[in-house]
Amino acid sequence: MRQSYLALCLAAGLLAGQAARADQIRNPNAVFAGLDKITGRIISFDVAIDETVQFGTLQITPRVCLTRPQTENPLTEGFVEVDDVESAKSAKRIFSGWMFAASPGLHGVEHPVYDVWLKDCKGGKEVVASPAPGTPAATPPNAQPAPTPGKKPRILKPQEPEEPKVEAPASSAEPAPPAEPVDIAAPPAGPAPLPPPVEVGAPPGAGAAPAAPAANPADPAAAPPKPKKKPKPKPPAPQSPQSQPTAAPPPQPQRAPEPRGGFPNLRDLF
Image (cartoon, rainbow, N blue to C red; front, side, top):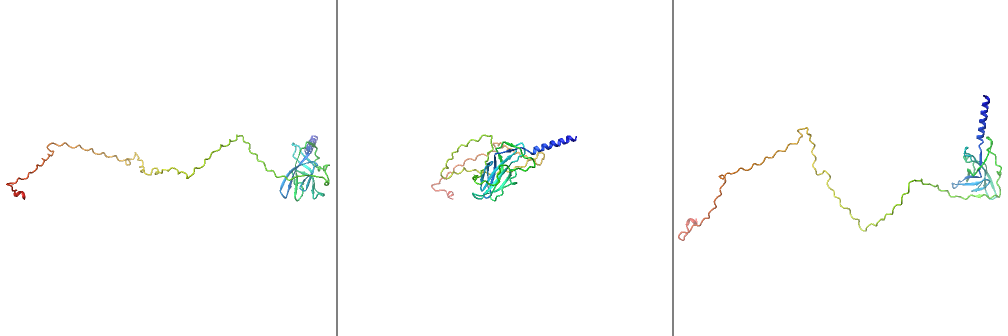
């Protein structure tokens, strides 16, 4: 029982050691980012291993750039040398060590105007064994203890910041056809014609008499009175022939009295 327990512990330790000692990939190119603290401009540039580039007054030379396979935990690190060129004949080493892409501020470059940090490593296929756990990272054999005099670096030119590209969302619908042009006629000269007159009548129900309340057929007092019948005129009674008035005889013309003996009658004069 005790022997089996010890065997299990030994196997677990071996597996843990193999997990800690994950393989690494050596890459031929390193990707850096540079910041100009005066203008606030940030540029990204690629540098080959053992190549020197100049960003401002800084000369950057990567010696090693390592990554891990996709099946392992990501870890990007590189050994970088940074020199500050004060003049054409003098240069000062301000940084020499390991940079980690996941923690740019862990081992950073201290400069009042410029800043440089490691972003990524790319292009590698060579797999190398990582050092044992607890062993400090060793300095690569191609590292230089001091700046190399007379070496001409590749000078980086300032680049304009790239505008972000906004891609239009893909639409499955067909684009709408272009609208047909519309001919707009010129307005006629002179004043515009007046609109036709609008007849405004009395509001509905203004002249009508108010409606009488509906009568309740169950209430005898509320029933409307019945109209009275008009009496029929009596025909005139027939008259008898005796009661009919007789017509008066027409007046006869009077003759003037004849004079007697040629002399008029005195009675006729008065």
